[in-house]
Structures are given as structure tokens and as C-alpha cells.
Length: 432
Image (cartoon, rainbow, N blue to C red):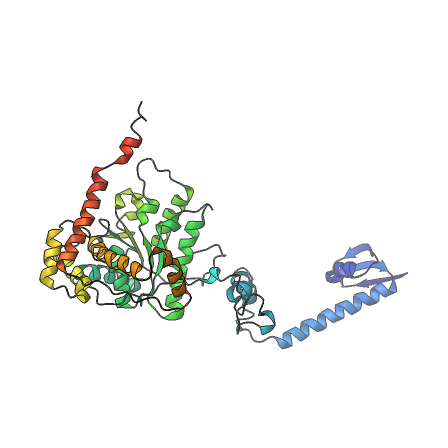
């Protein structure tokens, strides 16, 4: 046995973990520790201490610099790589098994060259409107309101006024609120993130609120990474959040309302569950919502400081101009459009689109007969899906007479729905 006095207090428990022998600790005086152990243990203790000092000196020599971002610490003492690992998305999910992205060894023939089990996870949520072909009419009043809201939000930091984050476009059904907005997006080159009322409810508590925050941050990434103007648009918001009759308020309804209110109050600090960082600042993204009756929505959400309201009821001249562009390729003149609009007053804009669509019915039925009847229909359509050529369809020639005839048919259906309420007959014994 050997006795020694040494200054190895800091590595005592390191020795305890590395060796099988258990040292017996004697009295300590100041920084001097007396211990009894085998000579081999003492040798390993000194070797461990010297090696640790050697590694420390070596690490100091290899340090990049005092200003290296790789070695910088945040307020909690976490370095860059730790934060990157915590918040970066999983590479397997972000990339997937796609040919040309990962090693060909892992992209076999069994599931195909692009076997990607997380394809739905990475679906593009932004929308572009190149599919809107044609010269559509945008009403100046609508254009001014939407464009002004978008510009004001992007210039909010340089304006000495409080700018509402949300623009609420509301009005009667079928008046073209969503379509006019999409035409404006196409004209301005905006690439928005679109949501619907159906996404405002889920079997998972809290999921719709998180989804809104994720879509908002996605729109921010469009601005940052693609240098494109973006916004978040929610269609028919009153259908998802409105209180009609005895409908029940759910936790998700409350979470969605709270999320939108928080976005309005703090548009640049949006969390989706990660830890807060001072540098995690989101770009301010304008939000546009559409609906029919905003009086059914939680009042604090639609107050003036958070939401700028715009009631859309197209005037007669607006309807004539919109319908004129709609029928322009059919050879219908402006005077004929006026006749159609005056014949069916107080109709929504979508009525005139449905009117034109109804005129195709007889031509489609004739086309079905020409290809061999209904028995051959499935075979012909499936052939077209496989890349074959479908028989030529000749669209009908539009005239004022055929358009008026289709209009009267649509009005008759509307009157039948309003006047023939079969539910009264089905439920007539419920009060007995």
C-alpha cells in the first residue's frame, strides 16, 4: 500500500468510473486530498490527468476563432450545432428516396425510381394562378382594396400608423369574392398560401391552430427564399368559426380564434412548438379571409385594430363588365350581355357562369350518343386517361336565345327549392 498527497480532486470521480478499484478517502486539508489505493490506480490517475491537460491545450490550439459562429453560444449556453440539430427537419423526411437526391443504392426498382413515403408531407402549399387563362375583368374597387391591404402590411414598419393584419372580405354568396381575389394575385404576382374552412377543425385538439401558424410561416419563407410576395388566405372563415343556431363551440374553434388574434397582435413572433430564439423573427405576412356573415364570428377577432372589413356587393355595371369578359370568346356583344343581366336581375355572379355551363348540356349528350352511347362511355373515357385521343367535342354556338333558355331553367330550379320544402312533409309528425 502506498500513501500520497496530491491535488487531483477534480478527477477523483473520473478515476472511480474508469477503474474497478474503490479508493478509500482520507482527511482533506485545503486543496490536498489523501487517498490510499494500489500503485497501478495511482499511475492511471496521473496518466488521466496529464492526458486531459494535453487534450485541453490541443483543443485551444485548434480553436477556429473567438468570433466563429460554429462555436458561438446563445443565451442558454447552447452552440450553433446544438440549435441546428434541435430545430432542423429530419433529412429523411425532407428529401425522401428520390433519384438523384440520395445514393442510387437506396433507390431500387422494387418501389420505383421515386419511391417516396413522405411525398404528401412535402406537398407544395402555395398557389399560383397560371391556369387562369383569359382576359377577366377585375373591378377597380376590389383591386384597390386588396392591393392596398397587401402593400400597407409590407410597408408597415415605415408607416406611422397601426396596420390591421387581416382583411375580411364579406358579402352575398356567389359574388366572386374568392375569384376576384385570385385574379388580383395573378395580376400582382402574389403566391399565396390558401386554406379553407374545412381545415379549421380536426379530431386532434390544437391541430388547426398549429396548422395556421405553419402556413403563416410558410408564406414568410416564400418571401424570404423565393423573393415573391405572399399572403395567407382563408376562404369561408365564417363557415368554420361562425356560431349558427345551437352549434357547439369546440376547443379547436377557440384555438383558431386565439391564433388569429395572436397573429394580429404579434405578426413577427410565430411559434410552431420550437424553443423561442431572439433571432427567430418571422416576416409580417398579410392575411385575407372571405365569408358571408362576419357577425357570426367572435367579435374581438373582427375589431378594427385587427381586421379591416370590406363589404363586396357588385354594382350593375360591375356585373355587366364581368359577364361581358366571361362571354367575350362566345361572340356575345355588350348589348346582348345587358339584355341577359336585365332579364335576370338580383342574381349572383356565379348564376351567369352556371347559365353558360347549362348551354353545354345538349351538346355533351349528343357527343355521348356519337361515341356509341352510355355503354361505351367508360371505355372511351378510360382510354383518354391512358393517353389516347378522345373523340372531338364540338362546343355549342352561344346565342342570346340559348342563354336565356338556360337562365329560365336555372330560375325554375331555384324557385322549386324555395317553394317545395319536402322536409316539412317528412317531419310533420315530429310535433305530435
